[in-house]
Structure formats: C-alpha cells, structure tokens
Image 1 (cartoon, rainbow, N blue to C red):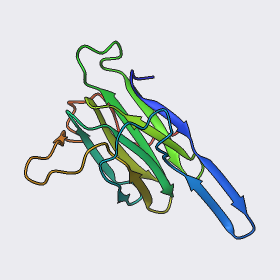
Image 2 (image 1 turned 90 degrees about the horizontal axis):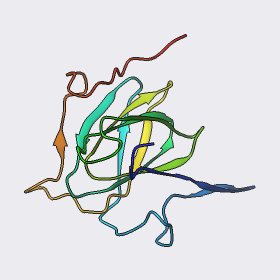
Image 3 (image 1 turned 45 degrees about the vertical axis):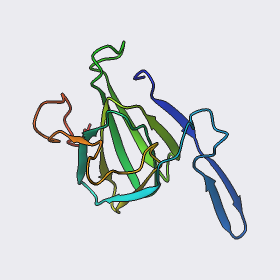
Image 4 (image 1 turned 180 degrees about the horizontal axis):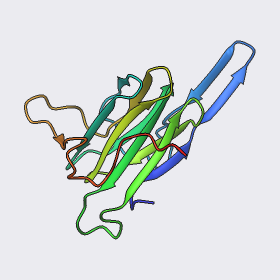
Length: 151
C-alpha cells in the first residue's frame, strides 16, 4: 500500500425503501478538513488522469457504476516512491480512498455504464491558481498501462 493512502469500507444501511451509504463523516479518522464536494463521470473505457496535487488530499468513491482508480507515488522521499496502487471501486466494492498530495491518480470507467465518482477534497478548487498538475495518461511518464488485462 502506498504510504498515506487509506481505504475505508463504506457503511451501507438498507431498508425496504432503498439504502443509505455514508461516505465521509467528520469523526472518521481520515477526515481532517473540508474543501468542497464534487462529482465527475467517466464513460465506459474512458481514462481520466493523471493528475496530482501539491497541497490537497483527495477522498474518492464511486457511487454508481464501477471504476478502476490507479495511484502512483511520485513523492521522492516516500518509502513507497514509484509504487502503483490499483483499486476497483463502485457498486460492487463501496470504499473511500484517501489520496495524499504528491500521489498521482487517475480513473477509468469499467463495465457497461458510466462511473459516477464523488470526491471530497481538503481544499476548494482555485480557478486562478489551481493545485492540479496533469500528466498524460498514455505518455509513459508513469509506468502504467491502462488497457484491460484479460486472461
């Protein structure tokens, strides 16, 4: 596991009307501050990434569909520098991933329907000076192949 990355199993509370799923509470051990909440959608087979932050921690889950969320530890002083983390997140595996700054991440919609990802980052998005640094998803700078692994 990449240093600083945490996984929280999400609590699903079902009843005859449907279900409720708690994503993040301010009494969770991985909660430290609140910036904003946003949703992004990846269509099946589409890769969104790579990007990383210098100050912001991301907390991501997929609430509809399924996605492959991949992490790459870019932090040179980290004991897990260069390590890849691959997580399959969504309706079949409801978890929250805590992604520290300096860890590049991306997602790919998998399955047959769009993947709806919710993020609760620690900072608001600053349109004038965004804390978001992009790397081409297929450029080779990060040693990861986004293609499906059959077999």
